[in-house]
Image 1: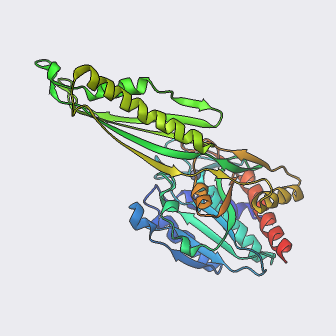
Image 2 (image 1 turned 180 degrees about the horizontal axis):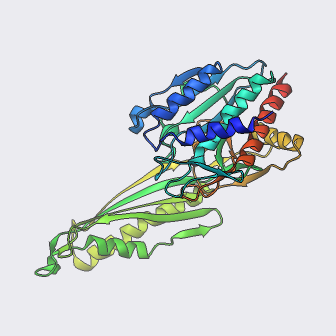
Image 3 (image 1 turned 30 degrees about the horizontal axis):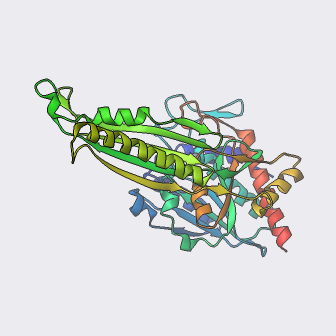
Length: 381
Ligand SMILES: [Zn+2]
């Protein structure tokens, strides 16, 4: 049923349209045209204004021909850099680039797969219930599209995001994450003439960082310092440094515990300095802890899992539940009460210029989705 060449053409067409984060308007227009030609009702929300992009999330609704609970299907339209002027190469059944850009299979393989799936449902007059396709913006810059999605436009209570590698896996567990930001205020002074009049903010921040446990804390918990900004010149004692990091865990309590350790690490270093020097106002700590996304945990017996498993079995394939350490739009949907499992498309080496995808894998995922959707409709009726 899957038209392999058509799927390849759609994929090639999509990756040739530049759509780095905040610049998804061009690709969104093309996807809209295709969806409208298939009879979808289209909505664009105002997430673009809020995320600083040139268009919003694209939501397309198909009523279907069978009575079944609404299914959500999601992919993101944006890519990372270097993502402009992509020249896809298809050789021996594998898409790559010329090595100067990413491919954008993350996540345009998903978009191509979803479009082909809807085409097949229509062409073959297969039974399917209502479908809500959600194509988000700005996923790669902190799930900004999903975070600002107009959820009043969505009625689905569960569904699938396509944004992973493994075509025989469904991600059902993702960690919660906190973002942390510290500003250490010290005092500036001439580093050569009067260093004793200064308080070195960078030195204090480094002491705090050196006392932290970083990287993998345990099987389900990680933490990282990712950005340090501060200082003006080598001959000035720096009066300000900003340190940004994150903590992730599948366990909410551990998330809080490690986040607290981060904060108290900085506090202690600054307090000790004050005690030792008798200083009162400086150094001063400003910090911010922000929840980035919540924990996702889909039970094994949820329809999202059982449906995917049964569909895979019908096709003679495996479907195993998986845990990820990463964040995706699905985490935000889950937080809003839409139980969203993440399926793979076959994409490999994402976020690198070596990114690739096998056409065969994309074909298999279309087959899987068609099976999931028709099975879902049959079960409901
Ligand atoms: Zn992605």
